[in-house]
Length: 286
Length: 286
Image (cartoon, rainbow over all chains, first blue to last red; front, side, top):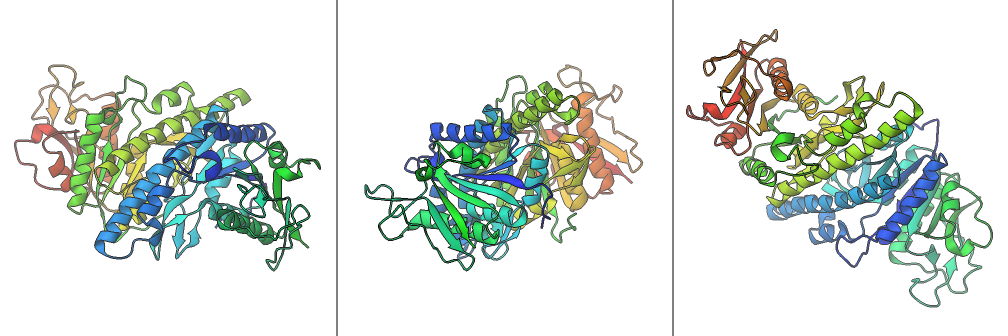
């Protein structure tokens, strides 16, 4: 496992799968959003921010992973194992295709982006990371490159294969290295008290979490009960884990691709009071 | 460094850059040749051959690597370093694009191919491999996947960055693991005594090398003096190194994509007497 580097990682940015791809259209980019996200990274790099990009899969990979039940591992009948192994290859072809597009988009902006798929270097054991590639990430950062990782199919010593999610990659980086900020770029302005597609959904600006994992949300912006479900809850849990594990030293935000404040958040600047509805911050309650 | 596995690698196949791409046309595949090479792997895998594929870059990568002098490393003026770092990214975009096409071609044939770029996991120090990814290759083989590697730009602790050639990857695999056969799939039937484009070029069926690196070629097929230059000489040197370093236990062949004997060679079967003009074998002189 890598030792903590002397120089912290300023920023880990997650390009959400929903933010950069159209989840309803197989292998379809949201090109404007990807270009916008790439612009954020460009500005950060120009200001000397050491940053790592992780992207979700969205409509790349998920379809094959689900159809072939990749996450069930290489277990079952010979036919099932054969089919899933093929599914791993199809899923990887799809996510590496997206990774190539993301890296291309970043390099087109003049960013020194290097795609770094996890398959091969990362290894899992029954769903837990048993070998990671954080050393490679730090080496690339030290050489002024921007590593671009993504959720991937990797080998699992117990199950055969498994999906390593982008969120687990981020948590591992934060565990192994000092990270100043983690920003999740979503297709919405952060966390809402109900699905943001509902007209009465209220934006939540701050979610306070205690060291013992209790949520003490500041619901001043919301009258309804805090009740977030599905994908967003998973994202909040990742965000909470990072905040709690770092004892609050890692700042964590969820915001929308193209929001007014995204550059300030990513560069670690003051966002001002007016932009509090543009992002959700996960805050460590001392 | 990886320990020698109990189960040897049956076959390492190099898809030559000239064999699978049109070197004169930027980023252009020779699709028929790639499909033919993929067919060879399919037949091998169906017969239970444990194999690894390495491909050259051809018209993918080389252009950028040359234009930006990537191999000169991240040294020089600030502007030169900046330019070369960008060149590394462009070169990697091009070679990973080809890797994706090669993996796609193999998966389309039903082969469980997994792309495994070297950047990140492999590390060089002044042109020598100081960290390799052979463990990942063995893990994928043990899980019945076919790892697909390629020449790549990697970090170099002394020079900043460097080109890690497919040939060096092959030599490293052969050093770290027992490998039964290495086959170079070229665009010609092996080694000739002069450029094969010349009408009087004679095919050389066997090249005998001694442990002290002397070439004692069986030039029975050739009346002219043994005089091979350029890219082919480099290939022969790699082939010789593998034969010599293994003390002759690794069989090494150079043949043409689509030649009659390529399946027999790859599967380790007798090629028969009539096919000796279809390949060159590098033989260890005891």
